[in-house]
Amino acid sequence: MTDLAPEAPRRLSKGERTRARIIGSATELFARSGYLAVSLRDIAAHAGLTHAGLLHHFPGKEALLLDVLSLRDELDGRRLFPAVLAPGTPEPEPAERLRVLLDVVTRNAGTPGLVALYAKLSAEASDPEHPAHLYFVRRYQILRRELTGLLAELFAAADVREDPAAVAQQLLALMDGLQTQWLLEPDAVDMAEQVRAFLRRYGVRAELG
Image 1: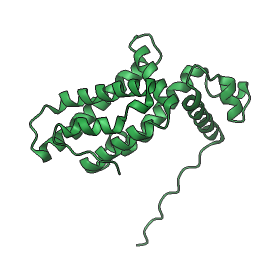
Image 2: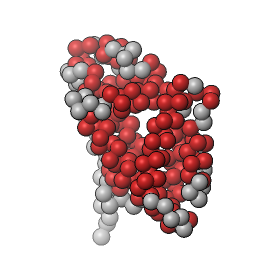
Image 3: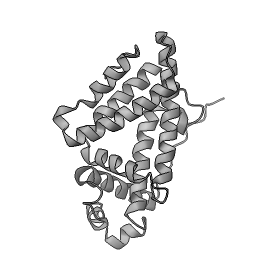
Image 4: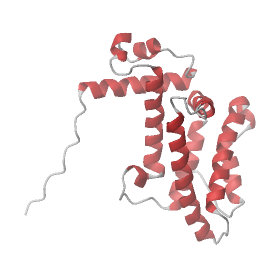
């Protein structure tokens, strides 16, 4: 029997392509200038649209922001925790997931606008009425759960008797705090090296690829 040809990727509709272009423009401008300094008109012009054309796809800057944040997390999540986005997908080896995590930390040092955006919004979103509140609650729930699982595997391999859930919370707090210090004084903080140093205290070697 002849094998069936693989299914061709679905072609995006015109509207989907336009939304992707808007999100790409917003991501670039937010990273370069920060959320507050960028207007919807700026994003529309960068994407080659009119202001009214952009509003046809996004009712406001907050809605667009949430899509920018979600897309960035999705892209990182495909590399770090693929089984979260596609249940049944085999997870990479723990050492590879750890390497990707360090790659993400290093990558963040090249996008100060987006790092500042995350730092500011995560604090503001502690207000239950904030439009990004549920987004950040869910984001930290997933990160705590997945990092706990990753650290449990790494600790078992290194015969480390520590509570992976507690260390996962400490690691997240460290990364968030390092981002704030780095934003204030970039030349004084090496975020990736500090994360590696923290993990070495638990017998985990974390190296960049």
